[in-house]
Length: 460
Image (cartoon, rainbow, N blue to C red; front, side, top):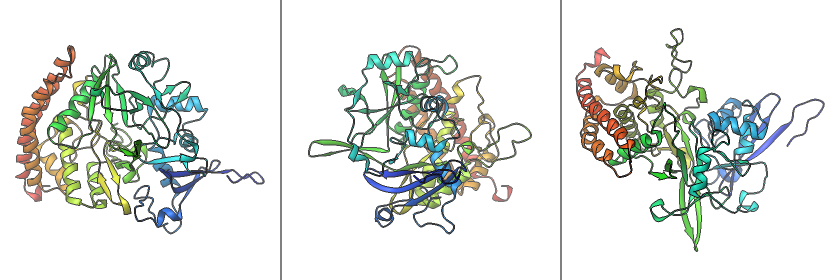
């Protein structure tokens, strides 16, 4: 920390770690909100190292790293919505105090990174004793969450990954089917391995946990790279998502959780949090033409930063088509992530947050990202898909092949998933409705991609 001199503001430091290896030192001047960063020399020379993001390369750029770039990267690591409000209240901070938030919450972020004020490696502090969360207590806490936020346990605010839904990060000591137990952890050796997403219980979004479980499971049935999910009955339904940025390792009988570095598409493109939707200023008539936020075109552009560009584009194409099939109008820029590989190459990560938003009435269902120029699911046409493919550098014959292949698979897989024993009572009718919707969209998609392939290039 640099102390104030003659009224000057104070500059604070945080140390950034990947496991016990120091990655960088970050500085912040609170008065002028200036951010600085320097990678550790040992990290830069390590053959397995990688930058925090493409916008923060290992080689220091002329004029140094821009303050805004560093701040934008950090903002994407923080929770949103109520989880953010709770963290602010418990730590006596404001929303503008991004540095204070990452200092308070940075011990357990998405991916590999950990932030400490202490220059000593995190392992030196030792691991706290894991705190078991019995199912009856979890159920009570879900019931009480309007009064005691789910992110607060034992009077302490727990980090929550980005997103608006209530979530709890836990360590699962064995599979649920084998009686696995849930623990709150936060040390060097043990990190969270799963994300709990309790059903909202809202009449506006009935069976939300089941909705996501169905869509995620359907993607896996189709051979698509979705994260592993399960339904936990506490007895309230809770979606359990296996974290793909965590790997379990066992050495000499000791289990350790290995963290993996990931970034979302907004971080990859150096876009602020408010740009996760393509219409970053909203859809009001006077601003709807402004489309500076995340778009399919921007997202597909990230393929240039990958080691296998053709594979990355194909993965993104399948992701875009699957969102159409399930009616997920809220598929935005933070819902697609990449692993960061040594040297800085990106690699598409498994999919998450797959929900059929169109099952619910009373919501703005404008598409987060347009197919061509179309922001309404019902208005997507063959021309819109042809335009989408052209902008994203996708061969329209490839889109036809993939669209028709997925459509054929969904026709049987959706009905099979709806018959799963995972669903009970009213949930069965609800998922049957999603299955019918997906089947209808499959028939529609098969026709649209066929027609899109036949549109003359000069018309686009």
